[in-house]
Length: 83
Image: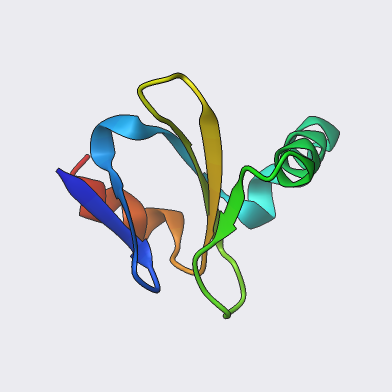
C-alpha cells in the first residue's frame, strides 16, 4: 500500500520506519542533529509549503534512509497508514 504525505508526495507504507511529531521530537539535540545531517546529505524532501507538523523516516530496499517533512499531523498520517 501507499500513503499520501501531502502535496503529491506518496511513499510505500512498508518503507516507513517512523512518523514523528516535529514539535515534540525536535526538543532533543540528537533529533535536530539527525535532521540537519539528513538535510546536508540531500536526504530530506519537504512535501508542502505550509507549516510542517511531522517528519517521516523511510528506508528504501537498498536500506537508504529518506526524511519527509509534512504539513500533515502525525495522527492524520498514522490513520492513513492504518495502524
